[in-house]
Image (cartoon, rainbow, N blue to C red; front, side):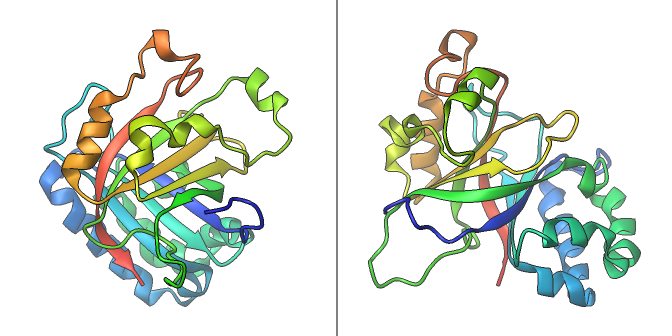
Length: 240
């Protein structure tokens, strides 16, 4: 798929830790229950076009995979302004925010970032409908990545993503999406890019994850400078 002339897609993405009182296996259900509260918030429905809650695959084991987080939420927004307005919405503050401590280790706003999407690769029929987000039970390897300031200053476009993120084993993904932060990163979440690699099976994604080299000696190569977080996740809730 060609990268030029892509429509602008804004996404809110968060990297979540569960409330420590919740068992890891119980987190997806608690998260679904929290999401259901959004049906009571009219403005949420108007500002959010699609949601995919991606829970960490608890059985997945590879040196590159983090176990420090429990899930990643991907939200396609109606427009960029929705990314700010949603946090001040009276319905959201009254209905959803009070439930957040039950499910998460912190309030959602404190670990969410606004991004612009760039599709690097998509394997689908030419006449297939556009896919906003992965659907339930789809498998995704996701990486929260940093890059050096020198590298950022050398590129002409703020949304241009390095080509090596679609080479080697990563090229087996059916879809590769690079999300670039469009606002100042939150404290503790200093990532520049969030990259999604969608796979057909858990085995395929895990094989690729096991081949990733994210050690210090590889920091100037495949993924660049800084600390990264990789997670193998399954979509446990999606809408529409």
